[in-house]
Amino acid sequence: VSYVLNDAPGRPISESTRQLVLRTAHELGHVPHASARSLRLGRSNIVLALVRDFTLGFISNTVMHRLDIALAERGYLVLTHRFDESVRSVRELFGLVSPTMVVAMGGLSVPDESEFRIGGTKFLRVHGIVSHERVGELQAEHLASQGHRLIGYALPSSPSLALIAEERLLGLRRACERLGLPQPVVTTVDTSAPETVFAALRAYEELDEPVTALATHNDEIAILFCSALNALGQRAGRDLAVIGVDNIPAARIDLTTVEIDAEAWGKAVVDVVVAMLEDREPEPIGTDFLRLVVRETA
Amino acid sequence: VSYVLNDAPGRPISESTRQLVLRTAHELGHVPHASARSLRLGRSNIVLALVRDFTLGFISNTVMHRLDIALAERGYLVLTHRFDESVRSVRELFGLVSPTMVVAMGGLSVPDESEFRIGGTKFLRVHGIVSHERVGELQAEHLASQGHRLIGYALPSSPSLALIAEERLLGLRRACERLGLPQPVVTTVDTSAPETVFAALRAYEELDEPVTALATHNDEIAILFCSALNALGQRAGRDLAVIGVDNIPAARIDLTTVEIDAEAWGKAVVDVVVAMLEDREPEPIGTDFLRLVVRETA
DNA sequence: TTGTAGGCGTTATCAA
DNA sequence: TTGATAACGCCTACAA
Image (cartoon, rainbow over all chains, first blue to last red; front, side):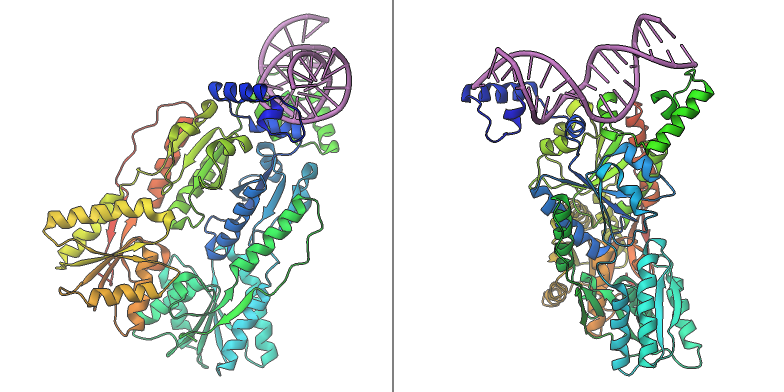
């Protein structure tokens, strides 16, 4: 029965038996039991993608999508879990699911990698493949090239973005130093509280040296600022330069931004994951997923 | 060993044995095996949330979050899977994971519910709890109350939104009919191709009777239109009324919208899921999760 | 080409 | 209070 249902190659099964098995299985409504299979095989074919938050954003979403398709073709199942150490420990997690591989998506700070390697489980941390410091650098370099000196920086308040946000800001700081610009004026913005956006704009105006350009953590925040400027009768690109990150669809009308090539990045992640699943040494992956997209706002 | 590790209540275990078990388990780095446990118990404690796309959006994200927290407290694990019938059949899915319950998130059109009830697996379809027709109605009613007659409607091209989009549009159509307004001018917009937004605006201008108000499928699209109007030197609320749906954070500066109360909805979903998991009859849930939020744009 | 048996890690039952 | 054992459903090595 097992040989028939699994199409075991090179096993001699008479056609009549084969049909009998298939027919009976169908009549009985038989569905193979995943847990039993996984227990016997010693692997589950489940790839567990850990995210910090389901608000994946355009980039991670594209990466997840590619991973899903590519692994489905190879017989693996990608399941996503919102992992929060304060809700459940790694041990508890493994008591509920036995993944063949764990992929920690970007932005997730993982307590200790070795905790995930229980019983030969493979582990990959996606964070680090794209250099977020370089993102901040590109923002600073572009603004400097446009003649700006004092740069405002909009940092998101969301904890799920903190890890990446710090790196981008660090890159921007370093670039400012290297380019001989003053250190940026950093303001924390809560995307669900618009007043923080207006407060940031007011704070910039009250400085002795005016902030003429604003770099934001991502496009969503940049668009918020553009809306706020409009509400004040001002305009991004004219009264204040604004540059975002990601090149999300909503940015593609007029926002200047640092594009992260989600397709290329997704492909790179897929290559590494597949190599690890097949116990091959992964190819070294490229690092150049970034591109400056100049539009109206900066 | 099992009694100790699972803190089995009412089982007489001497303290010395208990300590020995715990110490040894720790020394050996023992981690309980989820598949074996699930096989033996006949249930996995996995709740599989099926989504059409990880671009969950603000609302579904909140719902998922609440579900995750509430079920973790009760010992269940919420795993999300991007389900696409063209990639893998339900049977194949069940060959890879044996969930205790399947929750089909909004926007997912499921081929056949009974397919998911394999081996006593519970099933809930979240779609339908919020009346999306009512959403479209509220949009139309507000625009009519502001004196608008001919309404434009921006329909998203994304297939993952199609199911919900059709319902919202239907509600809007019916309301127009009821209110004695002409049928809306429907345009499909691709959020990743800004030119489709400008094309829609041009199309509205070329009509004999002018479109004075625009209802969109959601806030993200509404914001796109607001940006496009700005780029043309026009302004939402002055040159064209714009109303969205969701009340996402980015909308909270000036967008008029139909808010979906994500917290209340999330709580309702949690209540039903928990009741089903505990084999109780779920309480009938409220249906009033909608509220009109009037701001500058309409 | 088909039949049989053992074991993956767990838990529940029964005997000691 | 502890120990032994069977069984969950599946796959595979081996015998027939």
